[in-house]
Image (cartoon, rainbow, N blue to C red):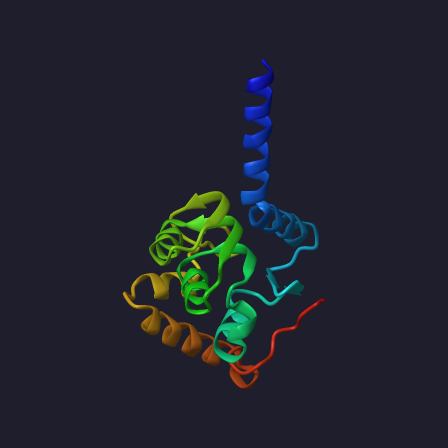
Length: 174
């Protein structure tokens, strides 16, 4: 009985040590949901929160401040092809989300980025719950990260006009 208890305690300790980053990611995901945020990034003991729609914040960070994403733990509301691609290009260490698409999952897995998702499905839907997100649709039809990055940048440049996502700093809340 004593040996079993010691083995159980050793297993619990090993799991606790190995899951500290996962625990942080789960805390971040809970915060993201409670505060209705779109993205939280934790890197170098600094937690930053964002609330722009779509992948605008990830796009900006990936292209203008890549050091923020490099090695970071990220909590994102939804991860589709575009978000997963930007996370790979930004060299994210770990990702947590409420929802991941099959292609987003595949992209993270191929890059060796561990992720946690509460649910998964075939695509990212728009707010109406019926229509497919145009960024997810457009990027899912492309085969390389570079092509996807170009599509995302052009999409937001057209959609946002002079306040282009690729040139507008995100609005960190913390």
